[in-house]
Image (cartoon, rainbow, N blue to C red; front, side, top):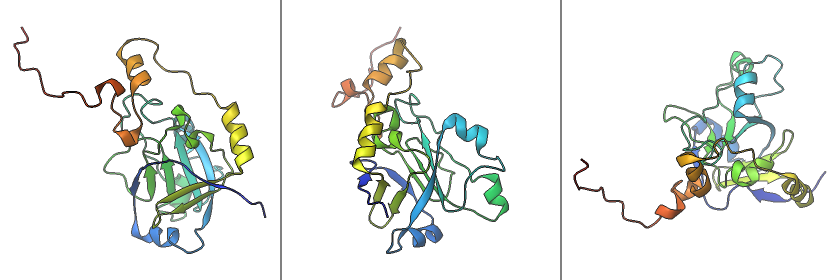
Length: 202
């Protein structure tokens, strides 16, 4: 058995949506480990309903690149559906992890707003298909079970995706936006007066 070093995905906080039936599994004393299927947004759309998708009801989906820097202004694009092949088997929930936002109408066991985001060098960006993840809802834990040496090697080889904008207010946003747990505010606005200007505009 390989001995692994548990590493938290985020140092501060994230959001979680819970479904009671699934939480009974997550609260099990053994902190059940799950197989993992890694995807980015484009992969998800292209592959989620493939009949040969290598996924089971115990797999975890990880969706990257949807945080404030990875998907500027962080729109609600982090919804992850259940693969069609699993729906046909009667699966109605599975663990999904993302650094993005998701709609308030979404449901199930979802861990979102993971921070620091993958585009900013967070641990989520180092996750690879085949890794093992340990989740404990009752303890608020999310651990990537990868050896320290392997993780450091991945970090040394990691580079962010090219920024989608190189000028204008979008570039300013990418360069100055804070992490999700800090409100995705712009760093130069923190603590500043937010009152509206009441002067005549024309």
